[in-house]
Structure formats: structure tokens, C-alpha cells
Amino acid sequence: MADAKERILGRIRQALQRQDPQPYEGEDLSGPVFTASSDPLDVLFAERFTQAGGKFFFAESPVHLIQALRELFAAKGWTSVACRDEALRREFTQAGLPSLYDGLDLEAAQAGLSRCESLVARTGSILLSSRLASGRALPIYPPVQLVVADTAQLVPDIADGLTAIRKRDGQQLPSLINLATGPSRTADIEKTLVLGAHGPREVYVFLLDRP
Image 1 (tube, rainbow, N blue to C red):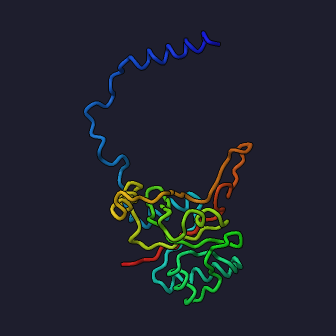
Image 2 (cartoon, helix red, strand yellow):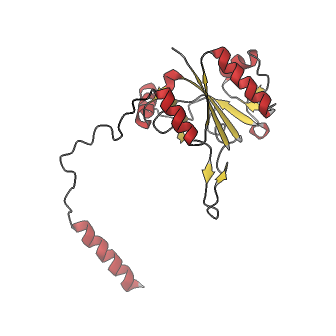
Image 3 (cartoon, rainbow, N blue to C red):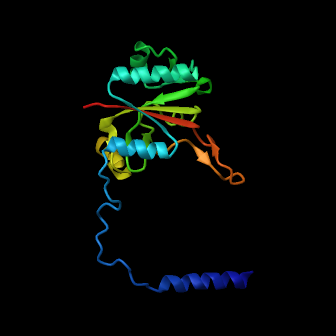
């Protein structure tokens, strides 16, 4: 066993001493890696988000947004939707969504409603952080995640979303920054796709058109 270990370590030492030529020497790697899309950000995000299994609603006005939420609540029969964002909860409750509560007891939540940091168009991802009122648990504990955002929060790529957080927070970054792309899924168990293994089984994004 010792001889085999020494042979492996010896090969590693030899590999570290050998300097291979750089295949891309002189290339400028500071620019974007991916080709920019010609599609509008909202269209690109909707396409990628739905491809990942998410459900997307575009609201032309706050009235349209409330109507879409009300119809979804009624169709699902939800009576307890957790929302830790006090301003959002007050606004939506006054608009006719009485099923919202403060989310302190997440075990009672049939769904969770929250804002986000940004929506990443290229990957169809939702950028979240612990700095939001929803905290760490709300976006992943309830079986259904509802995210409300507006068109000003659309960004082309992940780097743009992280840059926006850095501009706002400086060196005091949130303790958790999470990138969610569609419902939680895993195929680790006998190669069978399982939804909701580590988070919500369904993810909805309601995008409000805000000029």
C-alpha cells in the first residue's frame, strides 16, 4: 500500500514540475463569454425560465398582477401563503389576497411569496439573498415559491446581478446569495427525477411591467 501511495505522489510531483504551454496565450478573457441575445430581456427570461420548469406570468399593471395572483390562489385553494415582506403583504392583503400571513410558522405555509434581487435572463434564474425580507428559509421551505419582480430587475447575466448587489452593499455582502433555476430537482436516487427534494416543487414568477 505504501509503495502504491509513493508512486501516485511521485507522478503528481512530476506533473506539477512540468510546465505545459498555454493554449490561449494572449487572448483577452476579460470580456463576456457568451454571445449577447437580440431578444428583449423579459422574453429571454420567460423562455429560459419556462424551459427549466418554471411558470411565468407577465403583468402589464399592478391591477393585472393582483388579478393573476387572485386567480392562482383560487385555483390552488390556498388559505395560508407565507409572506415575510411586510410592505408587500400589506399591499396585497388590501388588494384582496387575505390568505397571506407573516410566515413565522413555515410549517403551515402552502406557498411562499417573496421578492428577489434580480432575474437573470440568460439562464432563466432567480437571484435571491438573505438580505431580503424573506430570509433564508422562505424561498426553499414551502412546496411552492411565488416571486414578484418588475422589469427593472431584469439583468442579462449572473455577473450583472452580482454587480448590482455589490453596488448596493459594498463590502458588506449578504451572508447568503442563492441562484434558483426552476423547481428543485434531483436524480440521485436510482436515476429517477424527483421534484421538490431540496426546495419547492413549483416556482412561479410574476413580472410586473414597470416603465
